[in-house]
Amino acid sequence: MRRRDLLTGFAAFGGAAAIGIPSSASAAPPSPTAALVSGVQDRLTGGPTGTTASPDALRSMLAAVRADFQHGRYRSLAARLPALIDRAESTAHAIIRPAAQAILAETYTATTQILIKLGEIGMAWMSVDRALLAARATPDPLTNAEAIRELVILNRKADHAGTAIALALEAANTLDVDGPDAPAAHVAMYGALLSTAGYTAAHGGNRDHANHLLDTAARTASRIGDGNHRYTGFGPTSVAVYRIGAAWALGDAGTAIAHAKTVNPNSITLPERRARYWVDVARAYAQWGHPEQTFTALLEAEAAAPEETRARPAVHAIAKSLLTRHHRNVPGITDFTSRLLQHS
Image (tube, rainbow, N blue to C red; front, side, top):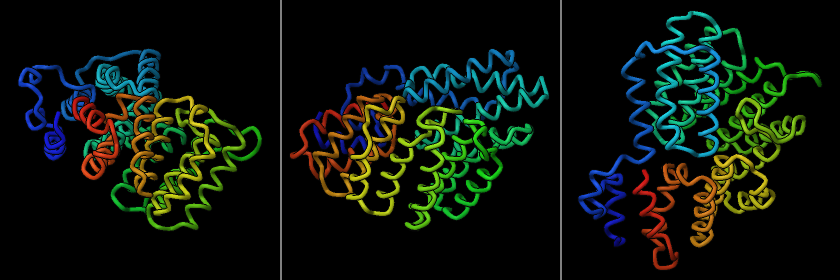
């Protein structure tokens, strides 16, 4: 596959004809990412079919979806997530009880998280609206805070940093985190909200506020250690990874790499989190002007979570830059880019 073909493919958002893939490839099944997005879109726009499930069955389906996301299993998500959305919606309509609404809220929160990762921001706004609507029908502050965290991320992506931070801090203040007996899930969500707020402050150019929020998140993390309470992956290691992204957002690549060197990536047990670490490292090295180290980090991200890494718009942007500017100095970038296009 020639470099010119690959660049044309990027310009056409991965069109098979544009990158010179043989015409027989047009009959191939859709990629895991395309199948996932299509299935979710059908459920968001088509309405529930009326197929209900018991709360226990829905909880089991939701746990499987969240495990798939945290392990980067997008092919499995393409099969599981649309079915979960349909059954959670149908059940919530048939059983108007807080428990059913809580499952629906968590389903749409997980859906929003996945859509954001895939860069499907328009659908993510639809999904988070449904998550918030269902969450408000429950008395659980944790369910509400979890949905609001995705709203915070979407506001950050819309360049509404002030609104995003205010939302995060307001949600954090509703959680039960006082005292040694505070529920670990509440403490983890509190810390995750502060981490997200700190990263958002960095995107807004406020270094002091970002550092303050991340320092507070770090103190919170020291109370519970590394873990995966309420699927947050929150702990001291996750705060350290947020510091990498915050430094990058502030334009300080050297500090970002210094933070990265304090983290042992092999200690990050969740593949999705480990891939995020390596993508953040790649972005920092790219900002610093080190193409070889950038590509090495991308390969590490791909090794950690292949399907997710190949689906992420941030990875495509970095790879496109390497291919355009450094293809002669970065052996393997052409093949890597081809893999991105064929799996997106």
